[in-house]
Image (cartoon, rainbow, N blue to C red; front, side):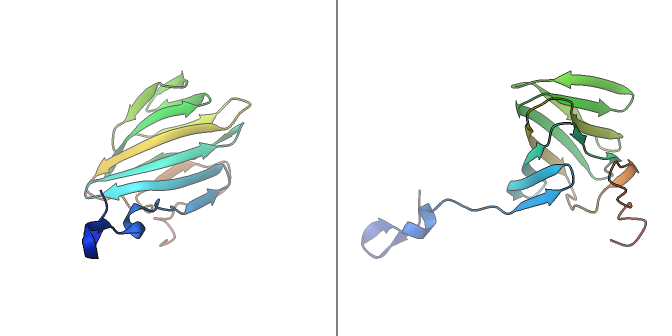
Length: 139
């Protein structure tokens, strides 16, 4: 459980919930829930009628689990719709996109696996918000 302090009682700070920073994007937001060597877990929220860029990662694969809403998933040359309690897998080096065709926010849990999980491991092929590819402009 928690770390013990003087008299064997748990340290109250070790029992406190962890607060995670939420990062806003034009399509919604994401929060890193946990990360460790070789993995990262995110909560991603996509606003209705918005989508992420068509993108690819060289160093990681991703598993997406839909918590609520409907996801329109492009993975390679395949396009599928998945709903609550359904999931899909995106292999590394595969062009992919996540979109929300619905009327309520799409919430997914993303599990990333790979040797490098930095936000700069992204090649954007198409972006609705005219964001440049970070690898092309040094960011």
